[in-house]
Length: 77
Image (tube, rainbow, N blue to C red; front, side, top):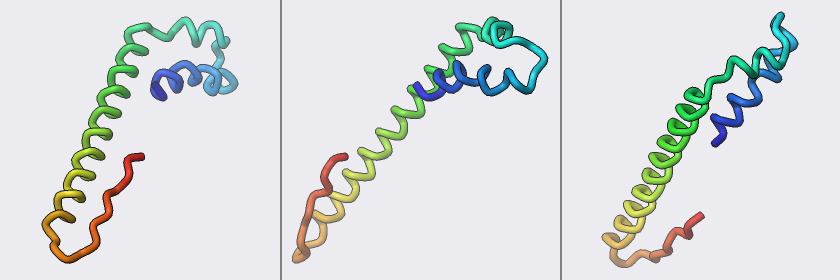
């Protein structure tokens, strides 16, 4: 979602430095580009959350294989 917001706010940041009006900059935005940004953001978010879950599971498994040590589960964030 951040990528879409970034695409929508980008013309505001560019307007003072370009010869085009804000309206012209917004007309240059393509719906396909916004959809692409959304899909890329969703994919990155999914991969990051999956990596986090795998890391947590590895930590829990490694603690289970260490007899005699205090085992504390890592709380989910």
